[in-house]
Length: 85
Image (cartoon, rainbow, N blue to C red; front, side, top):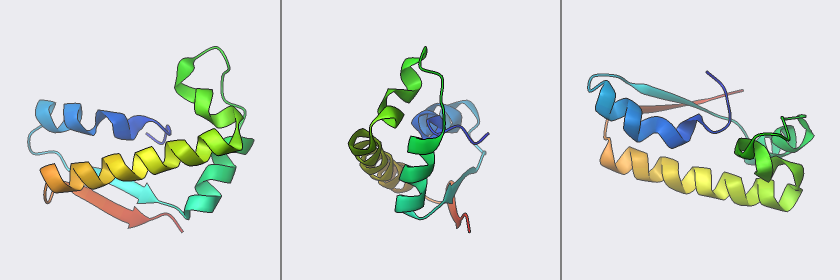
């Protein structure tokens, strides 16, 4: 599933499926932010509030990056990050 907010659920996935590996495709940060900003996400859901302002999109990416670093630390060997390109 490629929805932008799925990284938030890595802890739940790890607990529910103790042997599961979590795959994260990493794209160039600038391409990721511009892609999210340009995509017309549903304005009716709060999941995408960050995507309507480029500065907010960049801040969201920073939070994503920090949380993924946390998951790598607390779930060693369970997070597989691969280049998107």
